[in-house]
Image (cartoon, rainbow, N blue to C red; front, side, top):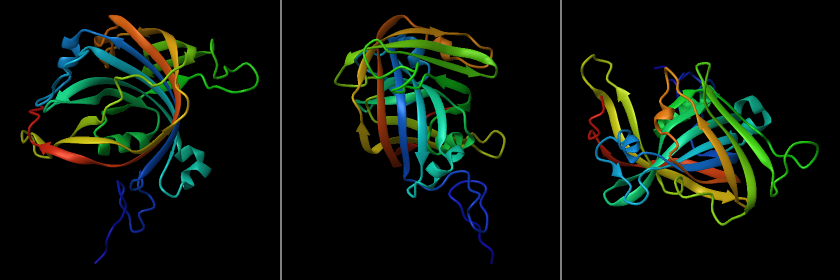
Length: 268
């Protein structure tokens, strides 16, 4: 009897065509983070049951740009950069589940198909977008990692710009912010193939880095703008009050999550 292999579609006799390899997945990246406050009701409307608003600072949002190189355990993708390099921009809020604080990604755009596939597995609501951010470099006109360095970041999807920011580094700091500092709480959803049968997969899962290392975080000032779009709703998380901005280089390993419960979200 023939068998097919591969962690993800397409499954083949060898498994070599799978869009993504099996975890662990390893990441090296530069992060630009802009934290601000929005109307807590706009956060609440994005939290399905049984999630609740965070008890402290319920309207806090982090909008994060990331320039990644990623790979499987073998690291072979790093020598074929088209398979490892991608960028993303994502909005994170904080929420509460059974009295514990979590971070939750509510919007995210990436520029490679393998990153979308990983997001489907992890519960990230990834969509295709166009993401750009200034890269640091020790020579020439690019910014160094030092006080006064300025970085630009843009996000677009379906030919519309959704967000842009200019981040100016101030000084070294102790953390990279608080909104994205908790374990991630996500839903894995897949509609039934039969019309009207709801969700075939409805899982609430917790995940986070199995290992982490990071360079010196820098605090920064940010000028952030959000734009409306006929197909995206990021602008509903409107900027009410800036909190802070940050720059940091990080290394992360992701190697699975934990199923907390299933069939309870009442998502449609």
